[in-house]
Amino acid sequence: MKAIVDATHFASKQENRKEIAEAIAPKAYLNQPLTVLEQVLTGNYDDGLGKEHNDPDRIDFDPFPWHSMAVWILTQMKRWGYVKGDVDYKAVAEQVYLASECGEKMKEIGYPPPGSTYQNHTIMNKVFDPGKPEEYIESFSIKRT
Image (cartoon, rainbow, N blue to C red; front, side):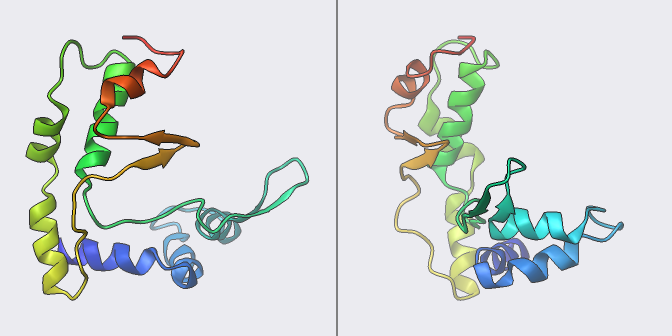
């Protein structure tokens, strides 16, 4: 777990993204053109329609297993019909995502863990409040619930 936390912390820094792209591009890993991976990881890319983009926050790496992100994943499972009925989002999130254990490992290698395991997330330009999962699901016009 320490290695994952450390690697993710390294990957979260924009200045390391080209080095990461170079490391994972070869056939033994992703077998993808270096240019493509650099564009994905740095956020500097052409959208295929002739427009250049510079979006360094396009992708991020976060070593912490947020309980709020587990709740979001559960909302998507419910939204698409993979989970039926009432869901105790918080209980499931806290049983599956070992945030306290990760926080301990972060401290051991010198990274401060977050003060809370829940936060709002913006996903596809929509704010997700983990305290209101059912409202979030209902806010979508397309769903299988």
